Image (cartoon, rainbow, N blue to C red):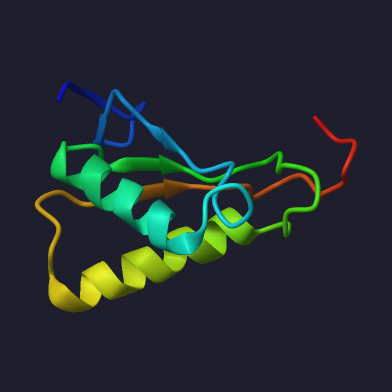
Amino acid sequence: MQFTKFGQTGLTVSRMILGTGTFGKQTDEEEAHRMLDKAAEAGINFIDTAKVYPPGAEVGGAEIVAGRWLSNKRARFMFRLPIFLKTKGFHPWEPTSN
């Protein structure tokens, strides 16, 4: 896996990022956790939760699924690298927002 510095923060993140936009709707939690396990095993330490969800999906569903996975893994100390979770933090959520 290739890594890069994250801006001026001093953090090192994988160049490959796992997107989670389908988690919770098109990808059930069990399969999502399997995907997250495989990504972590491959050295991916950067997870991008969704800003846009498929029709009918629960807003925030990707964060819930990823959060449960992180909680389970953290309890068992299974990470080789720190995991970085990117999510929304500024703009209010609207179905038509960019």
